Amino acid sequence: AHFPRGGVVATAGGLLFVATASDRKIRAYDEDTGKVLWGQDTPAGSEGIPAVYEVGGREYIAFCVAGGNGMMASRVVNPGKPAVPPGQGAYIVFALPAR
Image 1 (cartoon, one colour):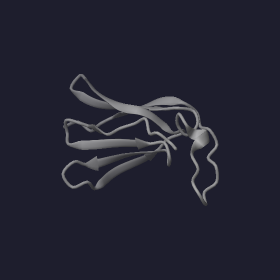
Image 2 (cartoon, rainbow, N blue to C red):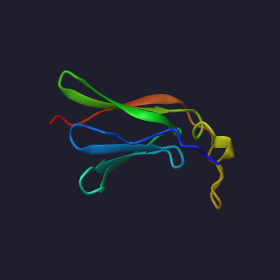
Image 3 (cartoon, rainbow, N blue to C red):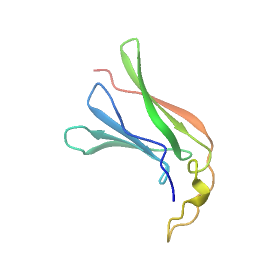
Image 4 (cartoon, rainbow, N blue to C red):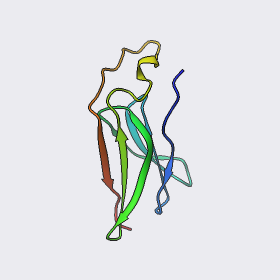
């Protein structure tokens, strides 16, 4: 079993961000409609809950991507899909559009 170590975070501007270890993606959803507004591939699986913070009136969101596909990557089996090689661990930060 794979135990996710992430979660959803909401921004002041009405966006919901989710990062997933299984497909190495970050997605932004509209909080009212649930529509995917944006997506980004990551170099490794995500870990933890994204952090949202503000500096100088601008909102930022930070994600932790761990080497591999996440904490329990060696136990994750995706039938019909090849094993994903470990990726580079990093913190990825995005500046959100000014409101």
